[in-house]
Length: 287
Image 1 (cartoon, rainbow, N blue to C red):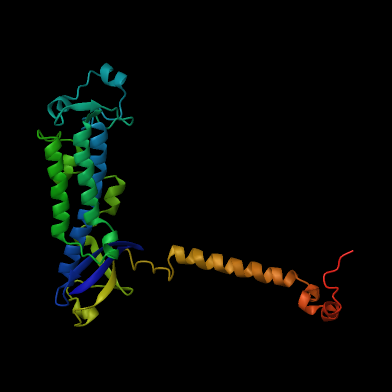
Image 2: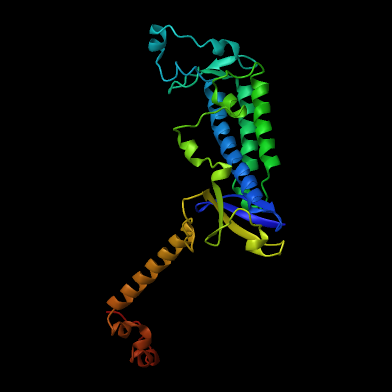
């Protein structure tokens, strides 16, 4: 099997496995699906962290308003009463006004937190270092874990406007958000290898030959954006280490240049009378 180390810019994403006979179209689709799934899981994990702290999302017309403004406008969060967490809620106000403050109790919050940790571990970029291939099945399992935790804590489901529910139902609208810039649609995706775009309609073997044990770095980006920038030959840590070493050498040379050419005359080994004084027993005599 051929392994592709998928990157977005200079940042590692995940490992993808395929064969040399696979078409570039299929590779593009599968890589894009996994990439977008990772983004979805990351978004859901963030919202679930907020859910465990501050409860369900307020209706859009109430978000960002103060308690006094809500009272003056006579608005009410009807879904907040319907969607109570298992075991009751603990009030914890959301300072930015996105959620109703009815947080799950400590035990239920722990269920959410533990599940978030498990889901993040599945899609972690550290999997690249462990040589673990990320598949569509693995991202689906992570989503199922998160969905299961929400069902346990909120058996009556979340409000229809809650971003977590919208994500699970694939109804989330990311228009105008930073997240929308990160998502890459399958028809817009392109893979680049060795400074060349992997053209649709061709096969993996057209770029890598017939060796199934090949491992390459492939960069994912949107079509029409040109070739991705080349990576620096050194990592940031290596660059800092080299600069520190160069600075130390520079300081050493500066110190050597400042020393007098006759400075060695002060050394004990350069004292011509040292041997004579030693024979006369007057070494290190001080007055």
